[in-house]
Amino acid sequence: MTADATVGASPTPSDPSAALNSAAPSSSDWLEIFKRNIRIAHDACGGCGGQQQVNLPPAERAAAIEEMIKDSKPDFQLTKTNADLALRGPEGTVPKVAGPGGAGADVTFVHPDGTGTFRREVKCTDGPNFQKVLTRAAKQVKYDGEIFVQVPASVRVDGMIKGFWGARTDEQLLKFRHVWVVVHDPSGKRVAAAMLGLRGMVF
Image 1 (tube, rainbow, N blue to C red):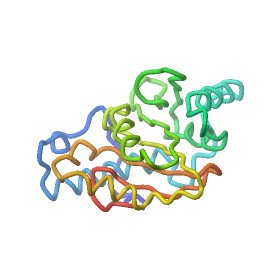
Image 2: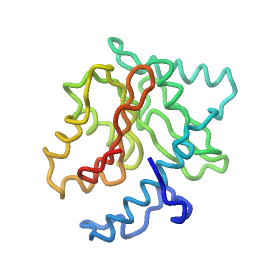
Image 3: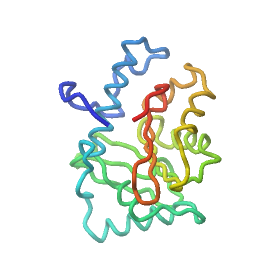
């Protein structure tokens, strides 16, 4: 993803502007929503060059990766590569892993002072239930954050994302306006990315 460097610092997901919370955003509001999401996504992926380090000591990092793998589907487990990628968040934050059975998002990134949290839900699916996966994951990030999805290398998800949009009206998509999805194959290669509440917005 790319970001406009002149836009400014990212607002925290817990403190969006009143315009972004309106029931029916105008076209100008949608632009602000887009800019906001781009800023947060840009920060979360370390400027989209990929954050080079996970902000955890080696032993804690290894334990967090193991927890995430255990929390994935037994018949299509999260790979170690993708678990490691999912721990990479905004610079200066520490990833907190919910672990198996944990409520809410799988990973929450928190600044040392406890502010500026960013939520990421991690899912593994072979495709048929893709829409349900996205719907459930959006709830887990409280409709404000990222859904990180692992799919088999053979699965093409562009059509499934379009199906998600096609099955919903613009009004129904409003609650997904602060949610984006990034899809990876088991090797960690990014195969798709989209903003769920912005119809047709793919990267």
